[in-house]
Length: 266
Image (cartoon, rainbow, N blue to C red):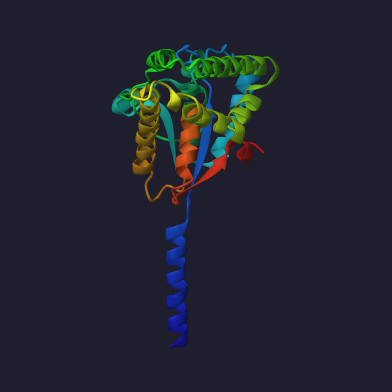
C-alpha cells in the first residue's frame, strides 16, 4: 500500500513538474540587413553579403540549429502566410546568395538546417504610427525641449549605429543589439518622449504609443497561439524595437523563459 501511495505521489509530482516547465524562447532582435530606410532613425546599411559576414551567419545559424527551436517566428504579415510558404519553398541557395534580408540570412537559413517545413509570420500591419503628427503635436504644444530631445535621441541612435558598423563584426552587432541596455533604450523612448507629446487635450503621443503596444501585443498573441504544447523551444526574429517589447511581455508570462543569443553563441 505504501509503495502504491509513493508511486502516486511521484506521478503527481512529475505531472505538476511537467505542467510548470517553461518553454524556452530564443529572442533575436535584428537591424534590417537590407535596409529599406523606413525607420524613423536613419542608419547606414551593413553589408552581410561579404565572405566574412556569410561565414559568421553560417556559424550563428549552426548555433541556432544546436539550440533546436521547434518553430521560428518572423516579422512577416500573418495574413500573408501563404506568400511566406511559397517564398520558403524557393531554392534556398539562390536566395542566400541574392537576398540580404535578415529573414533569409538568419531565419530561413536556420529553418532549412533544422529541417523545418515552414516559417511562421506574426507581424500585424494594421496599427498606426503617426510620427509626423507626433512631432507636429510637440510644436503646437510649444514642447521645444521635448522636440529637441527627440531629435537628439534619433541623431544619437543613427550616429551610434553608424560608428558601430565601422568597427564591429556582424556577430558583435547582433549581440550588442540584444543587450539589456539596447532593449531598455528601445522601450524608454516611447514612454519618456513619445507619450508626452501634444497639448493636454491632444493625445497624439499616447495614441502612437498605444498603437505600438497594440501591434506588438497582437504579435505576441500569435506567438502564444502558435506555440503548441509539443513545442519545447521556439525562436523569434524581429526588429530590435519589437523584441524589446516581447521581452517586457515575457516577464509576466510564466509559460516562457528567454534564452539569449549571446548564450547560444558561446
